[in-house]
Amino acid sequence: MQTESVTLKEILSQPEAWAAALDVLSGQYQVILDLDPAHRFDQIVFTGCGSTYYLALAAAPLTQELTGLPARAFPASELWLSPRSSYVDGQTLLVAVSRSGETTETLQACESFINDKRGDLLTLSCYGEMPLAKMGTLNIVMPSGQEQSVAQTRAFSTLYLGTVALACLWASRSDLFDSLARLPEAETRLLKNYSSLAAELGRDASIDRFYWLGSGPRYGLACELSLKMKEMSLSHSEPFYFMEFRHGPKSMITPSALTIGLRSTVNGQKEAAVLEDIKALGGRVLDIAETGSGVRFESGLEEAVRNVLYLPVGQLIAFERSISKNLNPDRPNNLDTVVKL
Image 1 (cartoon, rainbow, N blue to C red):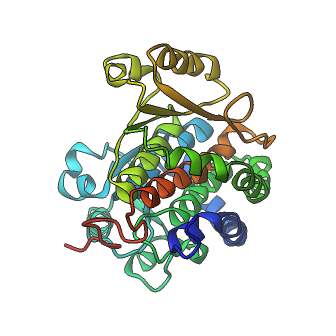
Image 2 (image 1 turned 30 degrees about the vertical axis):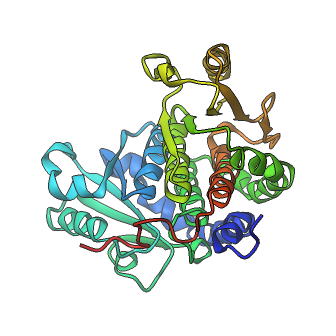
């Protein structure tokens, strides 16, 4: 591995970043509970741009699953430019997520939301001095997610962990919230056990395309890992829901395609059958799951709280692919750390 890369350092430092973020969230325990979405709001809307939009796609279904409150995800630009097709009648809790806290579309979406008096705003970010961190009814800042690199890794997982903690508390599942403290140790073990596998796959020149499969909250994570592969390594990479892959996309399977499945427990057998179909077509497969898979968490945690563990190994595969192509993962082509309009 290229140890001088800040991206690599940020990937490997995620266990420590998560532990620090959980300390922040524990300190906000009561004010998070006091928002009481189930009794005060008709819906929760998660928003962000780029990576944090994919984070929203992961956070919304998990929040709805745990709380029973309708939750949806939109890019911030859609909330800003097309609010009439995004919001429904009633009081909304808007959860805006941004690494930098200064992305134009996110700020515009929050400003229009406040001006239209649609409900309350909660912000999640990594930099307390930036505009977003001063806009909400509640602003949660997790400095441990701060990054030097352009492509989000540590920031994404830390902010996503924040949304998982919110869902646990709003569902009155203090047991799940408390169990989040076991994630850093589980991730340290994963990085130790599977970094060499990530390097092997990322540097395999016989692979010319990557497909990432995930369903439920894991679809948003599949989108994010696919984006990491594109950003860092300029490789052909696409995300799909597990079962949807059979409906056309499987035509793209070749012996040079690697499909990475973020397999769940609740639907694990059905998802495994999709991966078996891909192997029967001659494609290569890596499945990531709690047990019985190529990458095994063996965390003992409930599925709702362990989804964040899918991220770092996938990030490492993208990083290694970038290095193998003599690219700079810290400074991807044509990208800026913050998009300002």
